[in-house]
Image 1 (cartoon, rainbow, N blue to C red):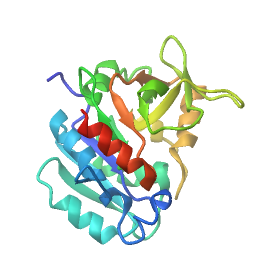
Image 2 (tube, rainbow, N blue to C red):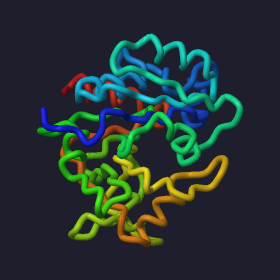
Image 3 (cartoon, rainbow, N blue to C red):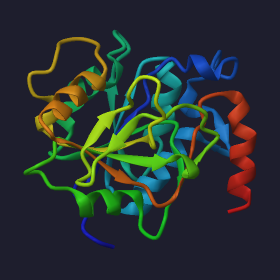
Image 4 (spheres, rainbow, N blue to C red):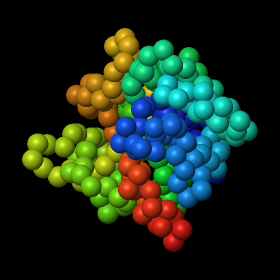
Length: 238
């Protein structure tokens, strides 16, 4: 296994899961089962396989059930970042968890399911990481490798790998997978309270410090109940 850029990942798991209703009426979205396994366990198992020792999981909606589930795991070792009092969104959640996060750290959404290419996503990001030029390195995927995804895409990428947002009325060739490698520098001077990481990405883009890496595996969008069965069928087929 090649050296990883970090031994810690944050899993963003605090959201309300509105798009996954009615399955999330009585359980948090990360505990919705796909292919016989809770969504968050797909992500945590990948972290363990890659050799990432520690995970920080933020909780808010139906937090007791999610907390009990993740703390029962042996690997990776889970620390809970408690947002029961106030849902802080993606950016605010990272800032609150910062005392538990080394520089840099991996971050990923709790509903990510993917099949790696020749190397693990975390090895690929680590190999590409350059702290001198990057505030964040986002794992992006072309449309052909994004299963269940219907949308115009998120980013354009220049020959050096720097990202820019999709232009109005255009299709962007790359979709954000929800997986990234983040420097503490991205989070400097962050707003207080709830805010989206998009604010910090915009600043990093303007400074030429937001980079992307094209994923060589397959990534599955699992945002709604209708996406579960096609994902399970694809996983069963390998």
